[in-house]
Length: 508
Image: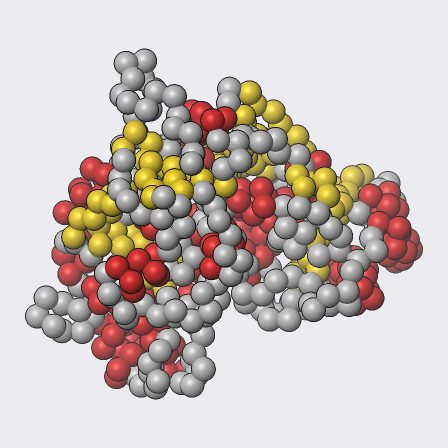
């Protein structure tokens, strides 16, 4: 069983206090839960405890969208509606929010919500199994999109929902109809009261709940988080649970001590006001995308392709880095940009180049009790060029076979500095040191490209797996350098399915 942090009661020195229950709204009903398994998912709680059976279990890993629900949180005086996958979200992560399922949408008199009515009128459902998930994704989208969303924005909103029988055309028509509706729903009419209730839930307490299987911590401050992790150095840190959720639902791991960072205000900070972008470890992809795309349009487009909207709404950049996956898309992209990682253990802090964090497969330079605090990303200068390319079998919601990220600083056509980083090519995200050396100081011409492509064989000996063969990976990585040269030297040649400068589809 976990060790309780020192000073569990209210402390006169301003230290944290404990709250022995999670608190959220289920629809408009207050829920206060003190006895619950730390690994209990929202889906299991809905179906087994609350008997809300509209939320379905399909893949149980955040891919199919049948379990989609909407979580509402207060943010700077307004309500933010986010579609998430209930199958991999933990009940403890609902603290301070409002949880909405398909059963909550209809009006008090039984009238269907505009999204539900549009699905009926546009024949968007056949067998119906996936329909509640589509409805909830479109409900959240309708709160963000405005009356005339683009086709691309609708497709992005539905990227995490699969339908095996209807096809997507009638569902897309339903999305257009629902968004065009100007009639306010009961959530709009109750928005002020809901906002007041949710804002009242936001406190400085450290939540601590559990049962005989383990304990769930949810600190509200970085100091409380640091103290908990020093006392429990083997605890599992959870951010969006888009990976840890699969440890629970697929690997059936016992995780007796979970520490959720979603309430830590310092880790949710995103600062674009200085010479660099500061990204707290708890910032989600959805929240970071617009800022990153403003400075690096390719990053915005990469994030649009990363998983799906519900996953981006929950998953964090810091969590992706801390997890150390060799096929994570964020790490090689930020490595190429020269990002700096900031870590903390207790009162001790240290920083390192992100590229130095990854030591070996499954091993990062992070000590027991230490956590990622934030990531610093330099802003570009006029001489900088940045491109990132994702190679995968599907455009949306797919794991990269190869990801190549390229940063160059140019003086005319001469490369004064360069960073090339790849995912999927080694046991960790890794820079291509030999290929960088082949390019640095040279004119960026066909000879330099050929030298860099040859040097990649010294940098990488990729593996063959279900996503790609070793030969395919190496050839693809080499060809991406050629593509980089083509885009930078012949910008009039079309190389992409979608434009790399378009920011019109950024949501949230």
